[in-house]
Image (cartoon, rainbow, N blue to C red; front, side):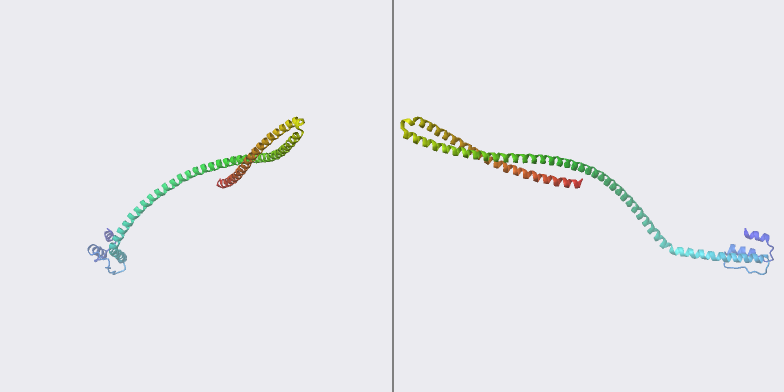
Length: 268
């Protein structure tokens, strides 16, 4: 259509260059051929334009062919690359699936950790409550031990007073025993004097016998008091030892409670 348009617009000589160019393109399609320019008219300028166009087309087509040849040479490599890329794509898809599964596992793990953390918080709260309860009980036990210690101290003082009174009673018993011995001596002397006085000393003799009898009873009672005081003294000694042991145990428990309260205080 372009060549027909050129034929209608341009006045040609006996030789038709434009027609020759069209015929050349239609039959040979050889873009390397250039039509000779004979004059400097309009037709010659048109032929020159077409020659320039065909030369550029030739260079362009040549470059395209070279690229096609190069691409054809790269076809096996491109095919291998395509297969490799498809494999990599499949691996990537599998990796994405694995990553998604790992993400799900991580999410579940985080949820489990969150649940465990909540349980730990509840356990810590319970432990804190137990510690505070233990501290309160420790304080109450401490107060109880202090009261027991105070009562033990009073008992120790009372036992000390009993021991002193027991010693005093023992001293009195010794005095009574000494008086009984003196009474027996006086009774014996009275009997001797009554024996010397014969009949005049009968009444004195009876009195002497009664005095001696009373002296014996007094001595027996004094010995009984002494035995009871000795037994009481033994019991007092045992009680004192037991009370001292209790006092030591109370003091040890008091120290343990103090240490436990200090340790629980650090936990709280």
